[in-house]
Length: 376
Image 1: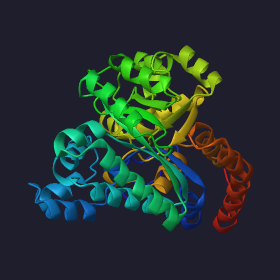
Image 2: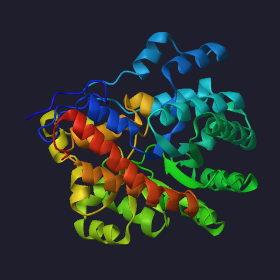
Image 3: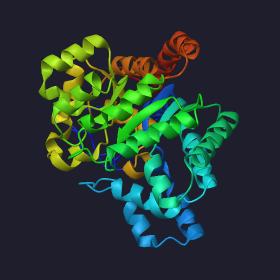
Image 4: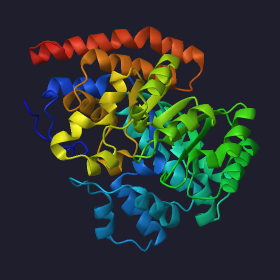
């Protein structure tokens, strides 16, 4: 049976692999305990906040342009242009960053995200606003502290290298992190356009971060770029986990080795590249997320840019079940993968491992009873 398109979640195509989702199961996806490991702060800005910030700062952006930024069509364009607009015109004061951090974590906590690790690109912020690294980081960390007090959600910040800038800017970013070291800033990442900016350009920045005990992750294999980018991220940048990593399936032997090593891959079911490049009727069947699972890789679903992808944390998990064909047991394993892959301290991770499986089972059983069918 082909499931109906869920227009409210990422505008993904109909799927012959998934399952229908009733209200009870949807509530299960909302309530299951979650970690978010792959979200860009600027891609989580609420639309009304975007409008308010545009008016506050007199940004040269019309309401029609804002509406277009938040549209998610059948062949969605990438979100990088929206992030650049935020960097240049809307996030101009430390309190703007505090606000969007607090709001992102409020939205995540409402869908049972207990812990979030999210990206911010300092290079463009500093270049385009004239703000100092330290004052923006302080604004974001203030939002994290307020959200923990208000909503009970913990969070870590991951300053992320803008790979469209020069490698020297990446080194400078890590140096700024080290000059403003804070336990809530756990590691370094890298994102933006991968096409002609391979990870080996940034070896020096990653080496500096690792020498000083920072964790590391990297976007690699995101835009159909070769599996060698994933290998470079793991073997040369020495990342602790990989963001996206889809093209690793083109080297099954290497994928199996990374599966044996237990490397966690933070995948995104609403990734724009595959919605643009795969035929709608083949999207679910041919999506590399399914091949990654078949190769034994440890996967963990995430939102990436939730308000721009038209997805929420619960929606990302729902799509794994409703469209990509993963069953409840597979989702439970992915929940545990999130604990394994996160950078929270071991005491908290041990507590989550001890309690979340039972909580998951209770929620799944309740949803199954309300749905009147077997949890499959």
